[in-house]
Length: 141
Image (cartoon, rainbow, N blue to C red):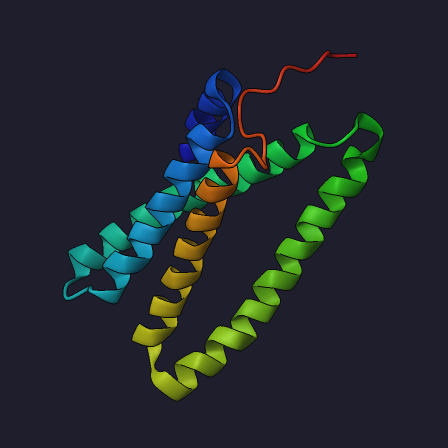
């Protein structure tokens, strides 16, 4: 549901217009999850987290592909998905260890902190002009 909307927004306005809301949705989902006291709150957390992931991952991939030369796009895409798999696997091990030692609440708090750090770095780098997150025009071959 969020991917088609995010794709249209990304094409019209640029990556930041999808990456930032996606990050906020994902972070909000984690924060609601940490404070969940009822089943409806759990469902709300799932919806927010799902919207965030649906906006964020395709936007990051598209943004990355728009920043590399056409002949390097296959390698860039493969690297993106390999790192996504490695991060998912390493994250499961790391967060599993955290959950075992401190409980699930702290595991989700650490995950939220990592997402907040991503947001701070992304916004900071965008404001300093170190990354281009605007609309990218490409010639279609």
